[in-house]
Amino acid sequence: MKLLVTGGAGFIGSNFILYWIKNHPDDKIVNLDKLTYAGNLENLKEIEKNQNYSFVRGDICDAKTVNNAMQEIDFVVHFAAESHVDRSIAEPATFVMTNVIGTQVLLDSAVKNNVKRFHHVSTDEVFGSLELNNSNKFNERTNYNPRSPYSASKAGSDYLVRAYFSTYGLPITVTNCSNNFGPYQFPEKIISLAITNILENKKIPIYGDGLYVRDWLYVEDHCRAIEAVLQKGKIGEAYCVGGLTEDINNLEIAKKIIKILGKDESYIEFVKDRPGHDRRYAVDWSKIKNELGWQPLYSLDEWLEKTVKWYTENESWWKAVKTGEYQRYYEKQYGRN
Ligand code: NAD
Ligand code: TYD
Image: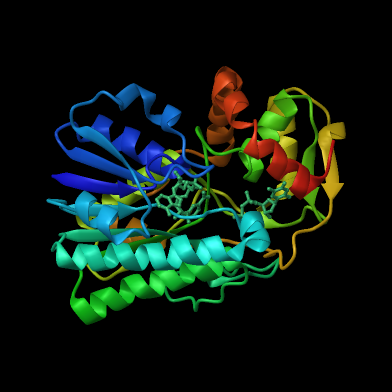
């Protein structure tokens, strides 16, 4: 089988490629990635010479590049996106371009080339925000209500993927997953930012009151969920994917990381809140569990310890990332410190 992975040099895409090559060594993988600030071929060093792996640098908005990469592809696994909410608030146009237009260009090419599956990696953020202190969770029947330019652009891409199923019969599947964490995450997202900041003896910036809740999914559990959907998922269906967490807020996440690293709570710094900040996400993943037999492997605490260990042992990876453009972004977002 031959897979086209878009955005394979990013956080989840690179974890997926490493996972897939390890578990499906006979499959071929083409990685199409523009290498934006978030793309990093260092993530794929261990497999870059593998004969079944090839890399194409290109933009998913460019129909010619996409069409060339789509030749003889069986499955498309579409990760490429602009993925950070704060950047979407500062620069929404790039999000609409890549996430909406880029997805549409890929879909057209997938139809033209008769791919056997187009799997779209989406987010629980398309569902909007839940209230604190109730037991509601997002599921596959929850109405879309995106509230940031990022989630609105992902919702737009989800709708297009579904439309290509209804209109052109493209065999699609979608996963809407919660917040991922793990190795190779660009240190702009809260867990990788918090760990690497403490390792640099800097504070963790906590937005607003810190009582915002996310559902946390370890990246390898996510890769296993996509594998289950590729192998056993029903064409035309979406699956919600979440972790083994029950309403942990950002302050609690920061405190857990501080504890693992043996520091004290003076490392927490409350900063200005994010505009339109979604209060709470929680995911009901019973459909993928009941229909495809997937569930997360370990608890948040176990995965968090492994993740902290990975960043501690891979300082050269994140130190190289936290330079240049990153410094400029950090100053703009958080001010000098
Ligand atoms: P990321 O920002 O780490 O990586 C995105 C990758 O896409 C980068 O390698 C980048 O170079 C590439 N890319 C961006 N624009 C491109 C373009 N125009 N053409 C080709 N490549 C381009 O993102 P991530 O965290 O790995 O997320 C992957 C996918 O999963 C995204 O679709 C995101 O919406 C979704 N998702 C992420 C999370 C999360 O917690 N990180 C949660 C739910 C869903
Ligand atoms: P983030 O990792 O950006 O993911 P998302 O916005 O897609 O959920 O943020 C996770 C939570 O952490 C969210 O409630 C915002 C909050 N947050 C902070 O408190 N400080 C920060 O510096 C960042 C980046 C996020």
